[in-house]
Image (cartoon, rainbow, N blue to C red; front, top):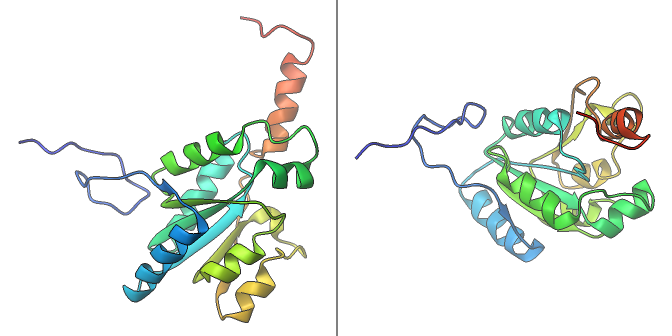
Amino acid sequence: MMRPLLFAANRGCLAGELFLMGRIVSLEEALTVRGNLQAEGKTVVFTNGHFDLLHMGHVDYLQRARELGDVLAVGLNSDASTRALKGEKRPIVPQGERARMLAALACVDYVIIFEETTANSLVEALKPDLYVKGGDWGEGHTPPEAEVVASYGGQVRILPYLPEHSTTELIETIVERFGSGGIGE
């Protein structure tokens, strides 16, 4: 029987290995998984965000985050949390759809939706070995979760920002090109 060849270049998998997409899990499930991974000596990388209108900047960032450890868990701001932080017009894509798209990425192992405006309680519960944020948090801006990570001896890493790839820029481009009505041909 022929084994299927699967693209897994950024995952560190061998060609032909079976890949199961990431899972959307509750905090309780994530805590069980975290305990098992810790017992196996695995390095858990965690990040969080809104991931509204998934784009290349997100994908690049998540792939680079995943390369830093054995498992990547992503905390996803809920719809209510996103509205509180980004305004009443956001999110554009509902949390269930955003979670499914993230879980479908080869680099994402687990997605956990959270309701708070920061991931402090999620980080405190999971205690990831490495907490990662994008370059938009560099240059004097410290993620609110950094203090929690420091309290248990974890590490915080800020990854470089991929220029011209943000949700805000994507929305601005759509409005600029299509704000007057029709979508054109």
